[in-house]
Length: 324
Ligand code: NAP
Ligand code: GDD
Image 1 (cartoon, protein in one colour):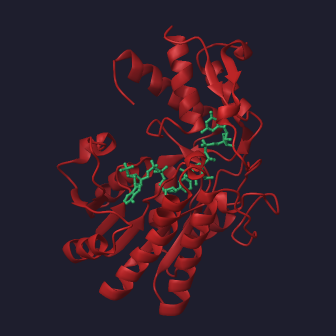
Image 2: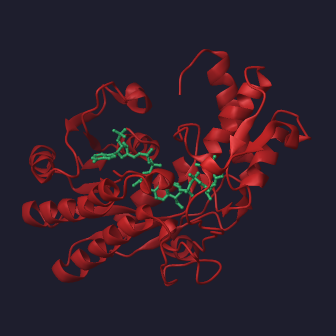
C-alpha cells in the first residue's frame, strides 16, 4: 500500500487531497500543528480513515519523527501561512513557515529517505508584477509581498534539491483555486458568504478592497488531482496549473449576486482602504498547456459554475446554522 504525508491537511487543499488519496487506496498521514481550539472541521469526516501526526514545519525534529512513523512514498508540502494580506504583518513567521519550512522538509527527506517523492505548493504569487501574459513555467518571477518572496525560497529550494541530490521534488505553480472549504478571509469566500447572508436578510452589505484586481480562479478539488498527477509523472518537473481565464474581483461580485437573482449589486457593496494592500498583483492568468500535454490535466469547472457552487453552499450552511 502506498502511503503519503500531507502537511497542511486541515486546510482547504489538504482536506481535498486527503479524500483523493484515500480514494486511490493510500494510507494517509496528516501533519497537523497544535492549536488552542480544534481546527479540524475540514477533515472531521475523515478522522477514522487518516492518521494525524502532531508537528510543525518550523520544527525539524517533528518532521523527522513523522517520516520515521509514516515511512511515506510521497510527501505533499501544503503547510503555509497562506494569506497574502497577513504576510505584511507577519513577514518573519511567513518566511519561517513558507520558506525555511520547505528547506527543513527537504533536508529531512534527503537524510531519512531521498527516494520519497516531494510536492511543493508553489504559487502564481511568484509572478507578482507580471512580466508576460499569460504566465507559464518559464515566465520570470517578481513577487510583490512577504508571502511571495517566502514562497520564492520554497520554490528554489525544491528545484535545488532536485538538481543537487537527484530527488523527485517538484513545484506545482498553482493559480488561485477556490471551493466551499475556502478560508473566510480570502476574497471569493468573503464574497459568497457575504452574499449568502444578504440573501437571508442577515446583512445589508459586504465591504471589500480592490475590486479591479484580476485572478485566474479554478475549483480546488480539480487542482489537488494535478498535485497527485505530478508525483506520478515519469520524471520530476514543475507545472503551472490554471484555468487560463482571468476575472476581476468585481466580476466575481457580480456573478455571486446573479446567483441569488440580484442585478443591482452596487447597492450592497462598499469599499474600505483597510482591505487594500501595500503592493498589489493586478492581473494573473496562467497557461497550463504543459500540464494538459504531459499530465492529461484540464480544468473542468467554469467561472460562473464555481461562483454558484460557493454561493449555494454558503446559503445552505447558514440556513442550517452551520459555522465557517
Ligand atoms: P490553507 O487553507 O490556508 O491551509 C494551510 C494549511 O497549512 C493549514 O492546514 C494550516 O494549519 C497549515 N499550516 C500553517 N502553518 C503551519 C506550520 N507551521 N506547520 C504545519 N502546518 C501549518 O491553504 P490552502 O488554500 O489549502 O493552500 C494550500 C497550500 O497551497 C499553501 O501552501 C498555499 O500557500 C498554497 N497555494 C494555495 C493556492 C490557493 O489558491 N488556494 C494557490 C497556490 C498555492 P492550521 O489549520 O493549523 O492553520
Ligand atoms: N482577501 C481579500 N479581502 N482580498 C480582497 C478584498 C478583500 O476584502 N478586496 C479585494 N481583494 C483582492 C486582493 O487585493 C487580491 O488582489 C484579490 O482580491 C485576491 O485576494 P485573496 O483572495 O486574498 O487571494 P490572493 O490572490 O492574494 O492569494 C491566494 O491565491 C494565491 C495564488 O495566486 C492565496 O490562496 C495564496 O495562498 C495563493 O498563493
